[in-house]
Structure formats: structure tokens, C-alpha cells
Length: 430
Image (cartoon, rainbow, N blue to C red; front, top):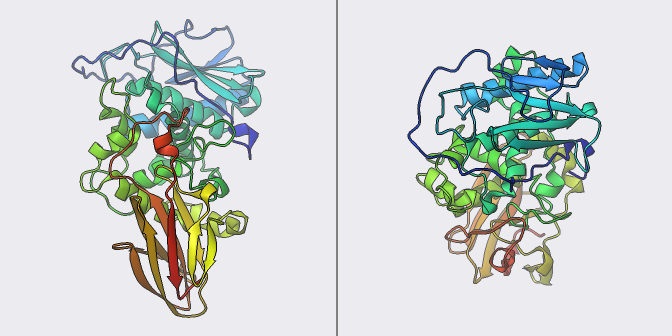
């Protein structure tokens, strides 16, 4: 991430030599309390420190102890509590819970080209391992991020699927943030002497560039490191969509169609039971108008940072008519977040004209309590009463009826085509 060099860890999702994940019936067995060390995974070494599920090589004692505590906490949260497939099981095994069980190796290194950490894998053993620059070994945004990649690799289904590639970084940052900030992992953090840390949500990018493809891996301009609040929204499920909640990200891998090269949004269409992907994405962006996604610090951070966010999405045509800027037309599953200015109490009338498929919502925030209510446009229009103690934001999301197959690292024209629209507004200005 550009704003913080310690959050540059990456994962090359096209792992050379990775075998296809076996799909035999899943065996079930008891997980041992302590896994077996395997010095043959990675470069090995004679200087190391162990915990039940991990081994750290070549690190000073304090840094190794810190890293092992956060890794054990993350393991307890995602594997023991949330039921993800263990990182101690070989990728090559058809078993979800029958051994052998191996510790994940972490190597403290002096430098890595262009990154603070990287996840690697041993294709023969089917085990992931991490390399982390020594000064960042105690940093959850690096070490837990990289463990997120290893954990993800061991889930098997997204590996070797080009259309999931850009989503790997999104997921790893979600793992790191969930471990450090979410109540889901609070007990695990406490059990291992860990406390929650400040999150790394980048609202100027997520909201200011919300017009981008929802997960975009473009070099230098993409959002794939920053897009993880979408996963937080799915996990917290503040709108109570059927099928979504704390198990959503796990299910996006469990229910992934084998070797289909589908995107996670295609899987989401099956995971969700009573809403389309477009409806879910449309409400996510509506909630991002005020960062109202159930994250413990995002709403306060939004208030602190809102003046630094680029909301310049529309050009005035006069007489209350506005047209979306061509460079900021919402792309596939992206949006425009448009704050409205009212004077005292007002009735705000909105009419959107477009030939595209979209979801329109007015988010209305009580400036005293921080509570937000949502009004969905119907037939392209809405009339919303805004009191003197409220503020309003219009959100227009490009939400096609069906998910589109796309590679986030090589965006196709069908996902980069923006939603062209005009909007007339009375009772407020932009």
C-alpha cells in the first residue's frame, strides 16, 4: 500500500508446480495439540523457536515470541473458531482433518525485493511457508497478512484460478484486519496476550476511487490491497442478507466451483440465499457512504478523513441537473458516492437517467447519533425528507444483473465500461 510501506506484502497466486487439489471424500480426525516440525519446507536452519502450530527461523527471541503469539491467535480464530481448513494439512491431501499435521514455517530475512513479506509454498509437501523481513516480524499487517495467504492456499479451491488472483491480497488484508480489530477474534487475541491494533483501512482510496472495478489489480492504480472492507461487510452482514455472516469468506472457498475459474462474486451468488450479488454490492456501497459496515473504527475514521476524500464525481449541467464525469463513471460493481448539501430541513427529490443497470440509494446520517438510514431509488427516483440534524449522500452503483467473469490483473472491456448517467436533484445541491 502506498500510504504505509509496511503493508506491501504480496502473494504470487500462480504458484509454479502447484498440484490440483484432490477432491476425494473428506476424512475427519482429531487435530493434535502440537504439530510436527518439517525443516524441509523452505530453506530450513538451526536457529528457531516453536509454538504448537508454527516455527520461526532466524529471528531474535523477542520478535519470534511476538510473531508466534499473533500467529497462534490467528490460527485459533480462523481455524479453531471459524472452521477454516488447517494450515497444518497438506494442500495435496483430500483430508480436511486427518493428518499428518505440520507446523507452518516462518523465516525472518534481511530483505525482500519490493515487499515486507511473502508467502511461498513447497509443491511436493503441499505446505505453505512465510518469509518476513525481520523488522516487520512483529507487525500483524505483515505477518498475519502473509499467514492469511498461507491459510487461503490450504483451503485449496482458489489456487491456480486466474479470476481469483487479484482477490488474494484483498482476502489477506481482511484476515489481518479481522484478527487485529474484530470481535470475532477478540477471545483468540486475549488468549494469546494480544490486543487489538489500529486498522489500516484506506478510506481515501476505497471511497475516493469507488468508481473502480470492485477488485482491480491494475499496476499502481488498482485497489486490490484496499478493497477488503467489502469482505468485512459480508462478514458483519449488517443488512441481514440470508446466507451471509461470519462464515461467508470460508464459504466463498468451500462452495467455489472446482476448476471453474469463476470469480468470488459468482460463488457469492450461491452463498447468498435471498439477494442477488448486485443487491449486496449496491447496499455495501450505500453503507460505505459513511463507512457504516460494522467495523469498529471505520465510521469515526470517515468523519476524521472525509475532507481528504475525492467526491468530485459529477459535473453540473445547470438547473439541478448533473452528469457523471467520464473518467469517474462507475465500472463493474463500482460506485459513485456523492455527498449532498442541504439547508436546514429539506425534501430531496432525485431522478436518475441511464440505460445501464444500477442500484441507487440515498444514505441519510443523523449528525448527532451517527445512525444511518437508507432509501433505495425505485424506478430511478426517490423523495427523501432530510431533517436539520441529518445529512444525505447519493450512491450510484454499477450492478449488472449477473456477475461477469474477469481477471483483476487484466481487466476486460466489459468490466471497465463505465455507467453513464445523469441525475436531477431538487432540495439539495452537489
